[in-house]
Image 1: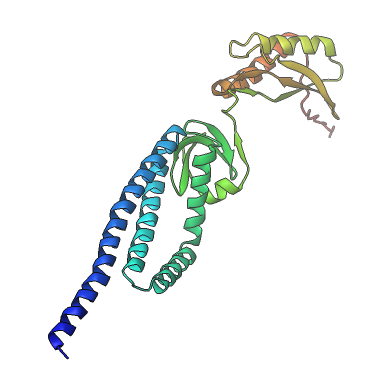
Image 2: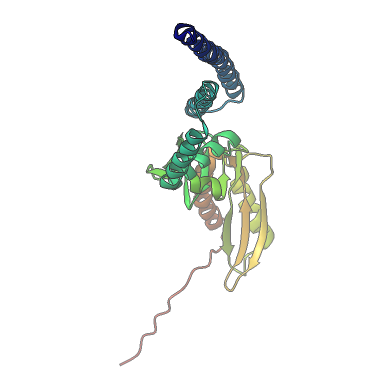
Amino acid sequence: MNLENIDTTYWIGLITEYGLKIIGAIAIWIIGSWIIKKLLKATRKVMTKSNYEESLQKFLINLLSWGLKILLIITLLGTLGVPTTSFAAIIAAAGLAVGLALQGSLGNFAGGVLIMIFKPFKIGDLIEAQGEIGVVKQIEIFTTKLIGLSNKEIIIPNGALSNGNIVNYTTEGTRRVDLTFGVGYDSDIKKTKEVLMKVITSHPKVIETPAPTVNVSELADSSVNFAVRPWCKTEDYWTVYFDVTENTKIALDAAGIEIPYPHQVEIHKQA
């Protein structure tokens, strides 16, 4: 038996077996990297056309990139004959541990993704959510920042924000101003409606369409209440609200129409 021939045959077989595997792994790496690059480019293009937020684009692209690269590496190891079952189990266990540790943060992240995808509001919108009202200042992955009506910054976790009710006052571009005024039972209803209608139609920021309305809404204990409903642009809401309230008092006084209020009667006893 020629040991030299045996050694040569062994090494040739070894090189042939592993050489083909290495060449295959290199080919898989080159082709896989090219495919990943094309997928990331296409995904970025779709997100840009869909007007995804820049921060969300970067985060999702990085997440997708790492996921595909890990999958590619596991495929390479399998090609080289390395058992990949243990690697998959380790990655799954690590993912579960991280998920449990960051449960709240992941919920906020998921909420941020949903907000950025479905866009119930955008920066600059006036919204009401989670018991707060404010203008949207910034939409981040985990939180949304509002500027409150008194110029305070409000930070709301995206998890709670996406799972709760959201009222967007800006979407339609106009708002109805809901006001109620009460007059005495002795007042003429027709005249009162004319005075109230004149107040709202003469305001420069009240729009014609939808048309403003004035109607009797309630016969209360001490007053006849009128529902006054002018419409205006969203940004003019508070101007119209305060102006109409003030002008109504002035107009009713000028027309001799009484606004009921509690009276205190003093009784003087003789000594």
